[in-house]
Amino acid sequence: MRSRFQNLLSLILLAGGTALLYVGAREYFDSRAGQYEAAREFERPVLDTPETRAATQTVSVRGVSRGETLAKLKIPRLDTELYVVEGDGTKELRRGPGHLAGTAMPGTNGNCVIAGHRDTHFRVLKDIKEGDDILLQTDGGEFLYRVKRTQIVSPENTSALEPTAGAVLNLITCYPFYYVGSAPKRFIVEAHLAGAVQRPS
Image 1 (tube, rainbow, N blue to C red):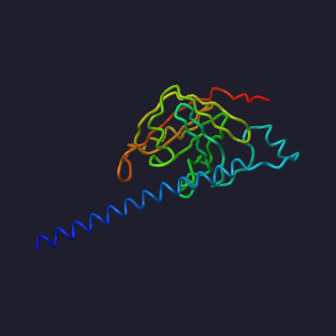
Image 2 (image 1 turned 135 degrees about the vertical axis):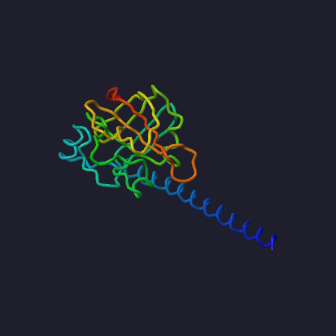
Image 3 (image 1 turned 45 degrees about the horizontal axis):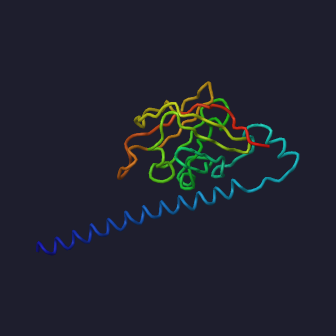
């Protein structure tokens, strides 16, 4: 009887481990495929028309629909390059970090909020430090933000979502980074706009 119970328990544990491995692998490959698609969409040439020339003279005025690629996010010290999509739903966050609709666009005054999963795209934030540069490239230019602070808060603390007077970038993910199940806290990276990046002509 004891031997049968042990065999059954072993089978249950094996099945559970296999299921977790499958879910983890699916999330990883979905995130990689999503970033590949987002990169292709972002790098797609824009037709040279009077309308598009006028649009690129201002900051991020191109209409971006939910799920479409909005920006390229780079953290040079961490050798990181990610493509940000518009929206923060389940489907969007599988493709990449998501810009919260209704928050400021990159490079403009206000609070630009971008959320991402701690176990895929935003795992890199565990190594970010005060003073690190974050670059956001859009159709309107490339903008340099500098990390002012990081903090760990409860899900009830929504201060990182509140409007700001200056140009602020908040990156949000769940915390702890290595946690099985639904993580109980949030990790916030607060960065302030340091200026636009001048590209060589």
